Amino acid sequence: MIVYVNGDSYATISDGKRYSEFLSDYINCPVTNVAISGSSNSRILRTSLRDLIELRQTHDTVIAVISLTFPLRTELWDQDIINNKFVNDGEFVSIQTTQSKRWFYDNESAEPSRYQSYVKEWLRWYNIEAETVELIKEIVLLTTWCKYSKIKYVLFSGPLQETVDLESPFIKSLYAEISKNPNVIDIFSDSFTEWCVRRGHKPIDDHTQEIHGKTYTIGHHGEAAHKDFAKFLFENYLGTQ
Image (cartoon, rainbow, N blue to C red):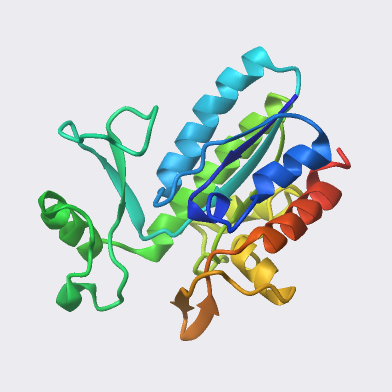
């Protein structure tokens, strides 16, 4: 048996142990945490599928904990990349396209200058409805494969995802699939950061995001929050299966 964790910085940053290590303690088995800060959803979902295919061949029981990230992250294939932190994934590089809603004027991307033209054009065509449809489609496909492969799993978002009109015909049936899945925590109404803040935990750093005019606290959390969240996942999603 093994616990597999993937995500971005919310699954890697803590001032002590992370929920991956606490889940290992609760379930009493090894854990592999392949989350990487700055990851895009494409990287998280693709590498999760590939890794789980391989782990299924060497372990009788695999427990997957998948955490999603911001839709404003994308990726490209950079053949000139040196010391790529996104290991074991070819030459894919996740990109934080912007930190600002004023991206056209602020030019805040911290990515290398050779990416700037790509980033600006990507942002020109960015649409949250399109990104959300693609994300939900990928969630349906991954979780269906996990069920078919008899892999225990829970999937959620690190920060809240921006809500779109989920009754629109191009997304309604896809969203219905994940909303009836008991192992997918609703990515629009709950998240790792929201769960921690609502239970009185204070982030160890200071970050916020704005969704439809409301500001949310999305800083990274410390060991106490990770411990409580691991207990929540174990008691409600992983330990009862």
